Image 1 (tube, one colour):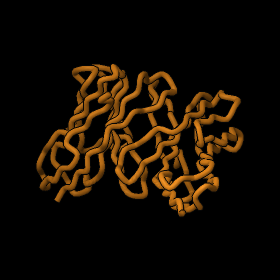
Image 2 (cartoon, each protein chain N blue to C red):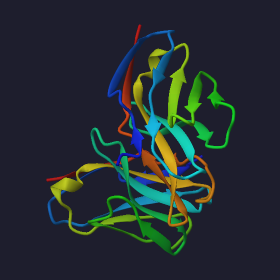
Image 3 (cartoon, chains in turn brown, purple):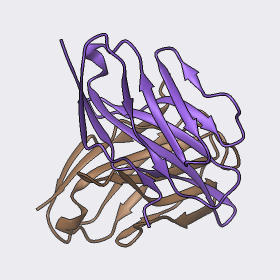
Amino acid sequence: NAGVTQTPKFQVLKTGQSMTLQCAQDMNHEYMSWYRQDPGMGLRLIHYSVGAGITDQGEVPNGYNVSRSTTEDFPLRLLSAAPSQTSVYFCASSYSPARNTEAFFGQGTRLTVV
Amino acid sequence: AQKITQTQPGMFVQEKEAVTLDCTYDTSDQSYGLFWYKQPSSGEMIFLIYQGSYDEQNATEGRYSLNFQKARKSANLVISASQLGDSAMYFCAMREVSGGYNKLIFGAGTRLAVHP
């Protein structure tokens, strides 16, 4: 059972570089989201999607782009990496955006921007 | 204003004892969901328990129970008979409806250490 798969698990970027964090789920979930986790701040929502072709901003969207061309995939793009984007990134999916269902999380991507 | 407050940055408990992790929340919605997640040192987020705002009974899942006090807006996690493997970060989260869609809002977490 794959669940939610994130790649890569670790990444080091130089300031100004761009990259894409990949997220894929095989549970046919409509709702997918990206969070970042920083010490003492819990997880904060970056962007989310309620279905293919529909995305919206979360709490901390600046510096990130997303797209949702298929139900399975929800990549997160860093346009021009900054040291402030050093964090652990989690992708999550849920069966429906309209239900109180739990979110399934990927293993996380630890990103360091130098 | 903080939506989810976990006032205990760190807790410790003796093995086999019970421990309560505090969580208070702030919302004006009538319908919401409250969740607890465990994050061990390996980093993954593990769903533990869910409580709906209209649920009259407190949720239970094995050794985990949620002490839901709606009037006080608190949703404390109780772990009974603690085990060494319970040592982890614990996050309280709430589903909030915004723009017609719901989102998970997380607290800052509580680090639990279980001592033998």
